[in-house]
Amino acid sequence: MNIGKSIKKAKVEHEINYRQLAELVGLSVAQIAALSAKPHASCKNIERLAKAFNMKASEFIALGETKW
Image (tube, rainbow, N blue to C red; front, side, top):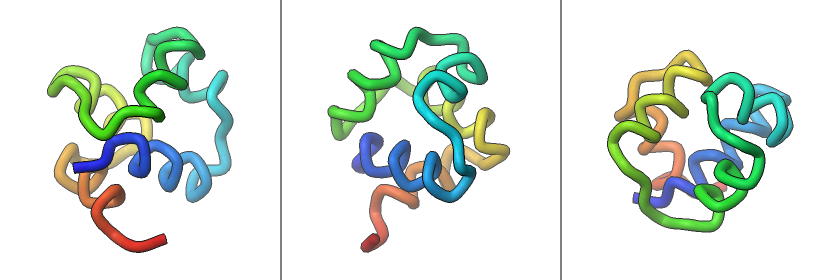
């Protein structure tokens, strides 16, 4: 699982920036940046991120597993 890669790919696909994502997820920009630098995240944060991108958690996680 590579949550940082999932975040980066989903941001590009949905054409949003860290600030917009932070607002959708309910976290600070610093927290989103920190999550982007890590390979893992809590289930709660994965679910929040997936919801922000209108995805299932499993689909969001899978983004980080595919080649870019």
